[in-house]
Amino acid sequence: MNIIFMGSAGFSIPSLEILYKSKHKIFALVTVPDKEKGRGQKISSSPVKEFGIKNNIPVLQPDKFKDEKFVSRLREFNADLFVVVAFRILPQEVFTIPAKGSFNLHASLLPKYRGAAPIQWALIKGEQKTGVTTFALEEKVDTGNIYLQKEVEIDDEDNLETLHDKLSDIGAKAVLETVDMIESGNYKLKGQDNSLATPAPKITPETGKIEWAKPAKEVHNLVRGLSPTPCAYFFHNDKKIKVYKTRVIKKENTIAGKIIGIKKNLFVECGTNELEIIELQLEGRKRMNAEEFLRGFRFE
Image 1 (spheres, rainbow, N blue to C red):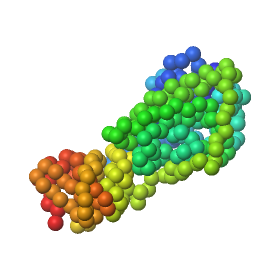
Image 2: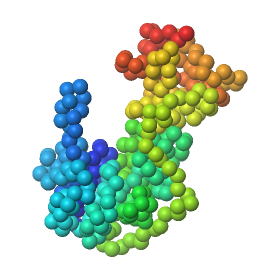
Image 3: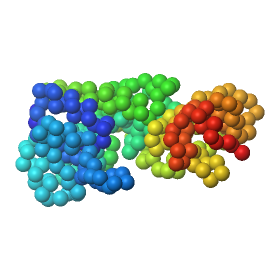
């Protein structure tokens, strides 16, 4: 089939690669505009654009999806299908262009974790499994009928980075399988049960603030869900300290927020149990393990 692929973040690259190597033809890529990044304000392109340049695929970077020139250009390609992975919300006048419609890859088992940050919230909420879903685009976000789903177990040691990579890889297989299904016509769409829907809103700075009065397990899951970026954090003497890796330690009669630093180890008591902080970072300093951190920083 003839495809236009839409994406921006690194999560979309395995899906793009698997389609590029398949029997299907990618007519064009749609991604975000270039932007200035870093102290030098150098122009930065999305991974999807870089892939397009490397492989001589036309790249479109609209500022507005409803722009008439952009919509007209999409129509000119006469693609059979639009495939959307890790991209923005599309208006109806765009996702209804191709004859076989448009579908999206979402990093959760819909209808659970609808929204911008499904991987983070699955970890924060302590889920033991998650997965990916391909679904037909509809006007209301993340509500379309489902083509297929693939489950992924969440390991105890998984964090945002490792789970992101797992889902990105299995998501690529789901994307290719979905394209093949649509081409053959051998599929049956499944509606979502809206009563089972849970939200996965955008991560804000407030999301990552640690509340020591909560159980250690909840704090641990928050750390996992936001590591390595943007990170869970707490303040000590007005200094922001990011936390990258933790472990729950059983302990009775705790005092929430009490910090104990003993040689190589750093512990903080929570509402229930205790949290061992294994890796952390003081603002303005590099990320380090607890032993290194305690050599140059003393908790009062």
